[in-house]
Length: 290
Ligand SMILES: Cc1cc2nc3c(=O)[nH]c(=O)nc-3n(C[C@H](O)[C@H](O)[C@H](O)COP(=O)(O)OP(=O)(O)OC[C@H]3O[C@@H](n4cnc5c(N)ncnc54)[C@H](O)[C@@H]3O)c2cc1C
Ligand code: SF4
Image 1: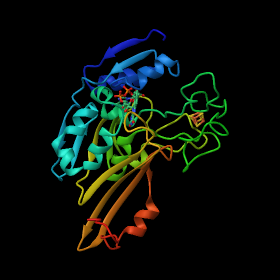
Image 2: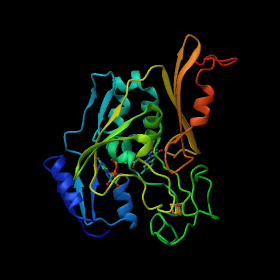
Image 3: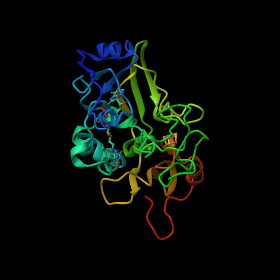
Image 4: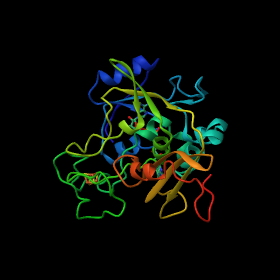
């Protein structure tokens, strides 16, 4: 691992200025993904700016009935938070389905959203990978591709996004709050992660130096749940997962939102299935849907 500078910014503006002002600087959350990649030699930032002590460590109820989650909230704390467990069970279930207890104790909400693909070739510097080394080729196409994407792929990359949490947030309609050198902006979560296209090295629509400060969840009517299929009962990434939010009124499906994980470069909204279900009967034959 190469030597690097470690900084703790006094506030969010200072953190943004430090990273934006240095092309090889990166924000450091819990480090459970970034530091692994530094050890593997996949990335070698010259400066890490620790953002875990910025004042983004709370989960707060908002006036509109929604919730604001600070970017530094640890995954374990978020999963256990009563507001989340009661109103957004899909999010709590998705968090608990990810990684291990020790990792969740360190991992932050901001870092979880921006974790990188688990494609085995991306993590192996001896292989060709357009995401790690643009223009080098994609070893997964024609290679080991069991965990790869089935939607939204390109000829340059077929990797999936690994976060369970992000899938639940996509179904819940989260909005990501960001502070950058030019000020703050709000990004609907569907627009945060991008498909690989011709630029597979770019995972998101964030610019260098943009800091995630919080994630807002709108008030949600109805029930939500998260289900994950994986090779082992714990400590394994999703082969496929689904988060669903279902609002049934008077026996009819008033609203439904479905997001799939493990199938694309980003949490994948099942828009056609949503449209087919919306307005239909809320009680499936032989089982409860409400
Ligand atoms: C063995 C193992 C198993 C795992 N299993 C799962 C699993 O089943 N499901 C799952 O979802 N995850 C799993 N994970 C991944 C884990 O959830 C992530 O490593 C973790 O959530 C990343 O959060 P972090 O705070 O440690 O991020 P870091 O490693 O600190 O950062 C990750 C990225 O986010 C950037 N970043 C961090 N904070 C901010 C911010 N506030 N604003 C802008 N950029 C920021 C960093 O610069 C870096 O690029 C697993 C990890 C391991 C090691
Ligand atoms: S699928 Fe993407 S991340 Fe995996 S080897 Fe191909 S280019 Fe790299």
